[in-house]
Image 1 (cartoon, rainbow, N blue to C red):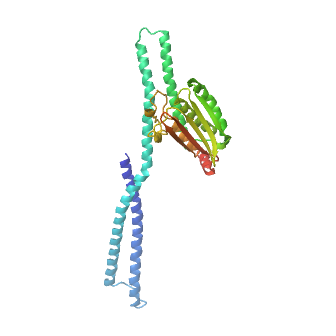
Image 2: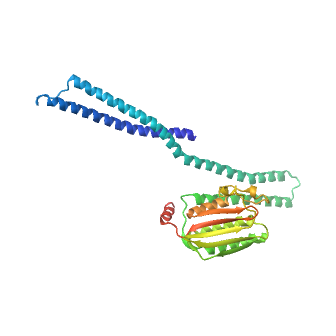
Image 3: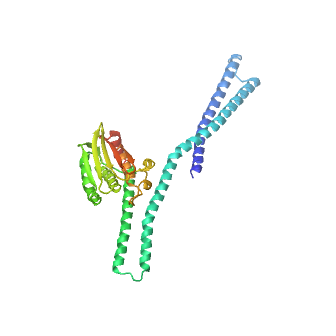
Length: 343
């Protein structure tokens, strides 16, 4: 598809370049021919009476025609060189122009394929369970209730996936509108930590929050989701009876949030890819089955990008991981106008 598009775009580039070149060549030819003829006429005029119209003799006329032919051949040669050079240049530029589009289309294809795969798994499980249940002629209320509970779990998984997809789409959509206000980040961290402790207590994991009062110009809803994703991941991949340390500090003109766990860790080979959509570092976390779709960290990165910040991870297998988010205390006014203008 892109090969044909590249050739088509190359053709348009060459057509535009040659149209401009031919236009200037014709203008140059006419200008040069007129100047030659004027020069010869002035020479003839000097050798004839003033009352006699200056008419070019056959000899001078043939010289003018010969000069015009040479000019035409030179312009033709120049246009052929331009045609050859512009063809190569246009083909190269067409490739450069289409490369970002090709990358975007490939990403969309992978995204659709991954999303379809994640949706197919719970749907297949539900379909199989329902078919088996329907074939059971001795089905009773207890079995039916168990079947419905199992189906409800799968529905919840699909709902969770759809929520993740909607969040990811929202933060990556340039037309989405976000309000940025001066907000105390420590309050957000404490609120999220308090809610996460309900889940952490089931694994006897303690959540420790340390930090100073740092106020930054942020979107509170998205930062709440960011902290929730990082804490949720920390709980998932921590060992029982472990702990999680959340720190907040100000570093120059940045608010720095770090979430540290002492759990399974991530392999060094997986670290460059953990913020990709649907990527799950199962090879380094295979000690137990953990539910997830590999979208949380992709959303966290999108939220960080929305704030012109950065997120990074450090990890050692069987030792733990540290996720660090750096957010500017003040959003650049140009970026704020840009965010507001796209709503």
